[in-house]
Amino acid sequence: MNTIRHDFRSDTVTRPSDGMRAAMAEAEVGDDVYGDDPTVNLLEQRIAGMMDKEAAMFVPSGTMSNLLALLAHCERGDEYIAGQDAHCYAHEAGGAAVLGSIQPQPIAHQADGTMAIDDIENAIKPDDSHYARTRLIALENTFGGRALPMGYMDAVADVADRHGLGLHLDGARGFNAALALSIDIATLGKRFDTVSICLSKGLGAPVGSVLVGRGELIGKARRYRKMVGGGLRQSGILAAAALYALDHNVERLADDHKRAKRLAEGLARHPQLSVTMPDTNIVWAKAEREVSGALTEHLESMGIAFGGGYGEHRWVTHIDIGDDDIENAISAVDTFFKD
Image (cartoon, rainbow, N blue to C red):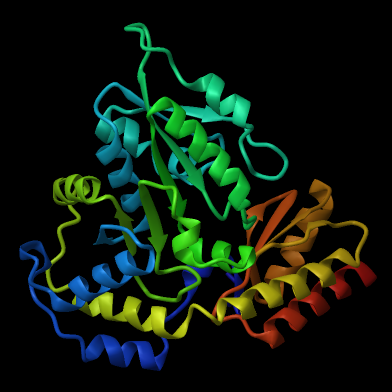
């Protein structure tokens, strides 16, 4: 395997900075299962305050955060509505169905990543014993790097309100979405009963997500966290990294967005590539399968790694990608198409 020198696979590959490591080493800790870890408590209070929510809970991963939200909203035999390609439906090992006996109702996405409002409303089941009970609508923002507009999220929230449904936001890259929409994170999550925020993507922390929301839902989710093995002990070491990220790495997300746009412009110079201009830090580039495969091999031989598969490439910028990485990637692609 070629050594990776420019890692665009995901913003999950980031490594803690020296300052973050120092904060982790100096963290005051306790037993979080007993509620005794002051650094975890501070992190939860801070994010709950930032998002104007009643409560928050630190968890090991975004997958667990979404799972606990679904378990808190739904009982066995209930149903949640989500996009066909939504992470909580398509990429989390069927956890809600396996562990919660919760039925997913997937909805096809539109070209912009949204689900049609009529499709959502039509999928809500009547109060009939033949059907699973629809309890929840789950949205994801960003979706594939696209920032779903506030007007759209409000429209979905209106549907949820009309039908008495819960509303969950998978905001794994919520800070990216807020930046792209020129709003604050509280505004992004205002209409949602629960919101999952990832700390280990663009914010650069090594581990963790936070689930925020209404107090009774977070209380229920906390019990489920213990049940699924997420009861943490001296986790203030990890919470300290998250607090450092909130202090130092939120505003700099603008750099990731700027570099993603520069990369997209460089890739788009080649007519063989169909490039979607990014809202945030993710660039999608499509090509004919044969071209895509050859380009992948060429770039990998030069130590450039990215996500996706043959026919579609996903490039993700992050805190460990600088201007030189962008220019080297563009140059490598230029070389491939010139040869």
